[in-house]
Image (cartoon, rainbow, N blue to C red; front, side, top):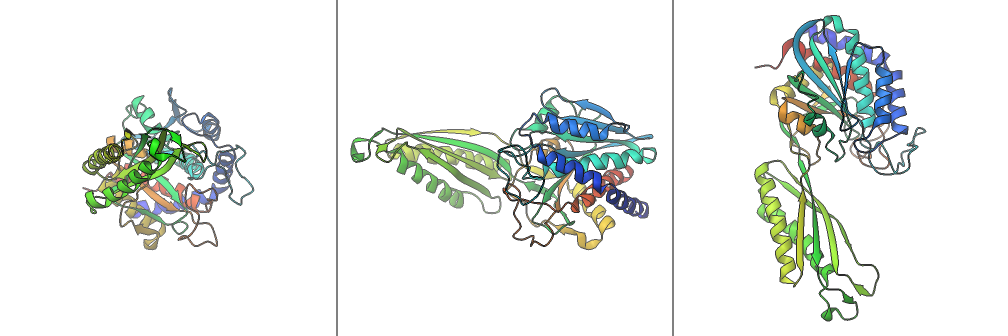
Length: 405
């Protein structure tokens, strides 16, 4: 344990020394955000930053993903560290001088920082190659924001040879104190599925609704009924969120439309509750519509599964944080969050964990700082050195000790 603590201190110092490179890469990625599975420009920046290091690069065919493999000096376990690369389709309003140069695209979820931290962690672990028994896989992944990038890389077999014995990922959040860490055993993030409901009625003149079958109030009634269904039929100790986020219908003020389209999301932490909710959404939408002589058509599109942390991996993260930064740096996460992550696909195959890094901007209250997915989201770049150091310390601890029994 003392050896791990000493190594961790070395990682902190090394990460701080590498901060200018980490920040420069993060800002370069931030200014040129890419959406979806084709993050080729970002991947090119990663490859340029890693040029000359003792890494074997394996690129995906179906997307702009890559695995960089570091072989240690001796045989041993295999650990995977992941960073996602894609941005969000939204404008940027953050008060920074390195704003996005791409209209309608912004790194509002910190993937620019995730990628930059992983690159710097790779550099630091390469420098310690002679001391590593085993190997480290650095997973640079596109398409996390709803595009299933991790699943594409898994389906190609990029994590099959060699197969990791453990997998870890960092996610930043402005809503925790700068440099702090948090995670939990078991469910961490929810599954996320999208639904679309089309309510079909009969169009007509808005002044004579009795001669039409107006789908608009029916859609509104369905939205309210879905929210009531969730509170009445779902166990509060195995919760769900059903959100109708968009209702689209009509073209002008004096025409009753033929159809109204509703979009939303379903979030749960278990397959049992997911099945209840999926069945309930169909039943409510179809029957409320039928009660008003309309037709309700429901499509549910599967999204990411539940992100589940292995308890042993969560315990390893906690122990490493406390050794690295002291007891006060770790905050146990009391309950899972309703966000979702496609790192869940990796954790379905490999024991591991995701953990959160606080990046609250200097001078701001983390309780009210603009969160991820805000057009004004900022992060404290000083926290990235903490993330780089912990990436390395977690990887080295696992390679040396494995999971505690």
